[in-house]
Length: 199
Image (cartoon, rainbow, N blue to C red; front, side, top):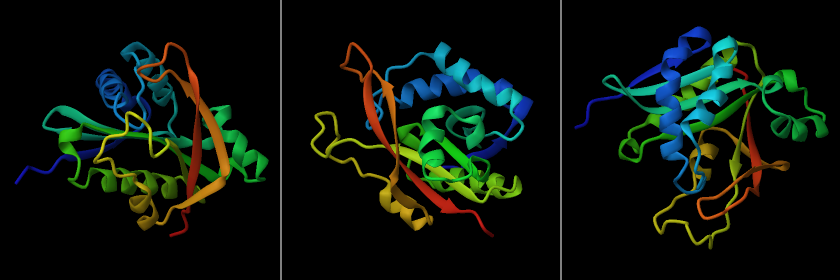
């Protein structure tokens, strides 16, 4: 049986030493379906650097020994981008009440070992500790017949539903990035899922 991975919750200055490894990890995992994103470590380091000066932010890391093999992020929605905020503002939801869960990445060889559950547990604990009433994240929507969709791909909808999250089709946004086979960025539809954070 594989040894359990160490799960650690970081915020503020404690995130700084992990950022280079996290950037490389994100570049690796984001190439997989459904993201199909070819990023750069330099861009990812710049993206993650905001967590150093954000004490209300969260980066949860999974370590196999000293190696970071997975990570998950979260921050107050008011500190996220306009694309994330706009659907909530339009729906009349107070941005200050929402803790936004960003991306979760995990090397494929470590999947199926409960790390996804640990990531949600840690981020939900932080959301409650910081006094947020709602947790939210958004997921990219790819067509079932997408040419790069692996035959064994299983969407995470069931997992999210079992954790108490509700798909909110009225809360939608669009992110743009170039797919692996695209020369330019294209718009990707995103739909939000939310959960009440009451104890």
